[in-house]
Amino acid sequence: MDADAVTRTYRRWAPIYDATFGRVTSPGRRRATAHVNASGGRVLEVGVGTGLALGHYGEGVEVTGIDFSEEMLALARDRVSAQGLSRVGGLRQMDARTLDFPDDSFDVVVAMYLISVVPEPQRVLAEMARVCKPEGEIVIVNHFAAETGPLNRLERFMGPFADRMGWHSDFEISTVLESGHVEEVAREGLAPLGLFTFLRLRPVKAAA
Ligand SMILES: C[S@@+](CC[C@H](N)C(=O)[O-])C[C@H]1O[C@@H](n2cnc3c(N)ncnc32)[C@H](O)[C@@H]1O
Figure 1 (tube, rainbow, N blue to C red):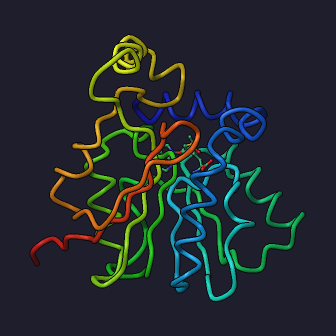
Figure 2: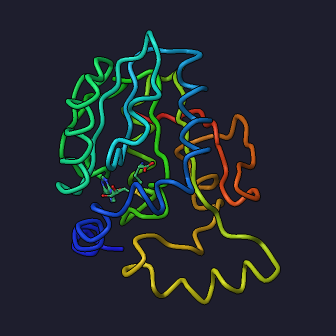
């Protein structure tokens, strides 16, 4: 998807997101935030969307959220004020390809259901690795393409409709793991039906 397609598609998604895709994908947000809460620290949520995860962060976490879509962010801001979410330090409109933070700023960088949406995922992974502390962690939750079987055929069929749907259904996990910007620490399949994957990654720092 290019940046214009992201803007158009998520303007359309924003009013119905929480009740549709947002609902099905709740287990992944619960899993990722439980993991983040165990270590705490400064957290960056890239592609924070309507802020569905923001209420799940616990004590000892200070979270900053960024998103490209003004409409999705507006809903996240409403949620923060309505629920008085004091752990949210800021919500900013930003492109994940050019994160406006210094190197090594965050203990954890989280991206839930983002990496198969962004234009230039490799560039986004490089940026996530750059702003993550060397001893920190990158956490990704996403659907990755099945390797074989009927689901794989359906995903390939849906691939060309990415701009309309708002994500690439045929996005391969190798795009992340072979990017050179991260190293795998652990992976788990998530409900429903193992359709989503929870990935813990170590940042690989670019040579100076
Ligand atoms: C499927 S939604 C996921 C939202 C949220 N993480 C969640 O768990 O519900 C994908 C989000 O990625 C955002 N996005 C897409 N491209 C982006 C980019 N280049 N930079 C920042 N956010 C982006 C979209 O605006 C949208 O809010």
